[in-house]
Image 1: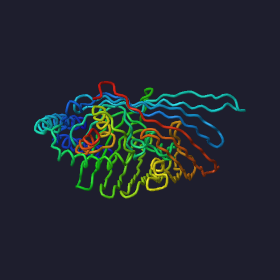
Image 2 (image 1 turned 135 degrees about the horizontal axis):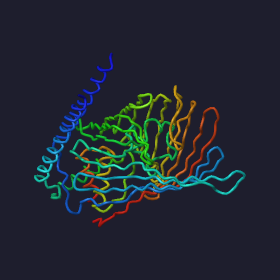
Image 3 (image 1 turned 120 degrees about the horizontal axis):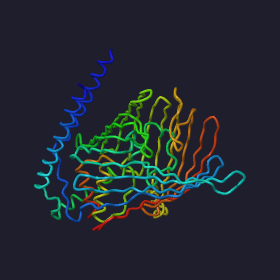
Image 4 (image 1 turned 45 degrees about the horizontal axis):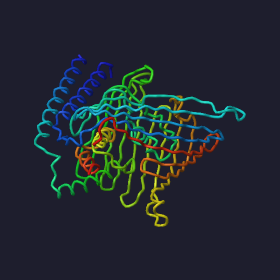
Length: 355
Length: 98
């Protein structure tokens, strides 16, 4: 096939995608009318936490705050942004004083336009929709285990560009959700991103509460690699169990994680306390690929095969305040333990009259 | 040549977005979501709780009930983040503010 033909097919695919987007945008939206009492007000929300990790005998203190600014404009617009301010302090050699520093990063700064019931158009810097962890489970007050999965560096992070996303019911018991995006190359400080395009789609079966989906990403620079992944989530209605799993594959490696979180609310003994307690177990495994692993200093994909079981115990003092403890065992070329204890808090403060 | 295709497609997107916005404004005028009969409100509350568990409960536990205007912002944020449908969003908002 010659290059001209490939370009032609690409152009037609792009045009088809944009035409499809046009048709969906043109579908009339249902009313988003609000009473004056329900008119949204700007708020600052987010989470704060303090964690202590003991990783292979090395103690690390991690205070962090993740403020989220939400500014609704009119009936259909939302400006939202999240920053991450995280410290990392470890003892100097020979039991010396604590040394470390705070680092700041901008996770997203985006403008959302709710075009209709089925589509939102997002522009700016946004969380790359690859799998479910980065967008849905990453905030410290939501994640059940503080250590992120080993495959987290595959396909995730932040992108600068445009995104179309939304959801609609396929039938009374099946919903579909989707996201398609294009990101441009940026080397601007705090706005670093790669040139890439990709998408994610998922089916949610409301009766058994099962979600299955897949993600795809095409790098439009360097080696123009393809990445793909699958995700699964299940909340069986009769029991307070939350099962999630992800698989991701890239040119620098692949891997999976499977996690189960069980609220002990069905235990009659000390029920008042038990229903606030959650037990978590996760198994994960990675396999190295042909290329050298990439990723920032916080999240680096392992360069050799690793298996890692993780266990955790969470106690919810309030709905937005929890204390937690966790244990992980790294099983690779060398083996070691990681212990984690900490506290996470979710806050929300209105920037106007809330009622 | 390829830029012509892209420009035409984008014009199509923008024009249809404008039409979409206009038609939704019309439908907004015909619906009055703020007016609820007691029976209807009960049904919406029950359905809203169900939709909350189905959508929001997949990632996190039920939060405390914030004041209505704060809740409206949070639900709009979650609509984008969790790609929940328009109908689910309105029912969840009703449930969380009643």
